[in-house]
Image (cartoon, rainbow, N blue to C red; front, side, top):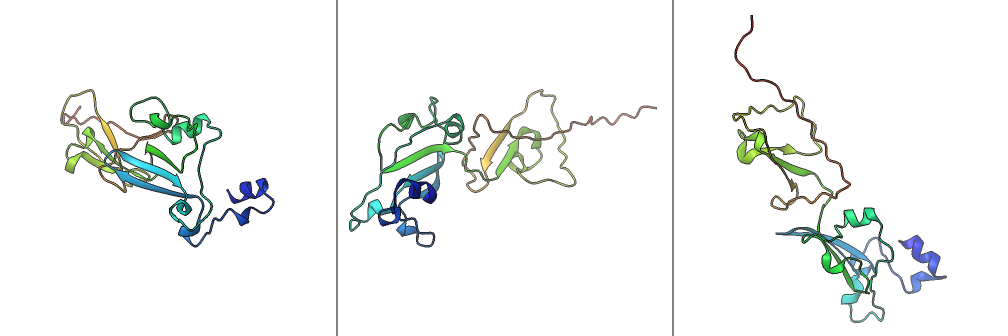
Length: 179
């Protein structure tokens, strides 16, 4: 961001400040927070809260590509950022609602019915030896839920283009011995 701004102005640091050490001395700040609806990312300027600073800072998204729409959950579904679909206005705070926090997930599934609360494990962890779960029913359906590892009750909203791999091996559990 600093390099881009310096390419626009001859001396951008007269009006643009992005201190690496002092958070309160930044024109652009991003913060993520959780609530009961998921994870949210907020882009704002701390300087807007300082009445002694003569400069204010407002934001407007110039171009949005498909990857940006998926990562920041912009679209037409009720859980998406419908109110700011294209951010066609200048605003002092840009908030992106119900996005993935990019941290590991806690995985729950009906396959782990013997474990406490159907907890299978965390993503991004390789289990050696692998975990075994005995299926006690003849159901042909199962469910898998992903929750944030940092906020236990915040469901994970994966972007449409994001891949998630869970390897499962089904072994027959038959006590009959064939001779």
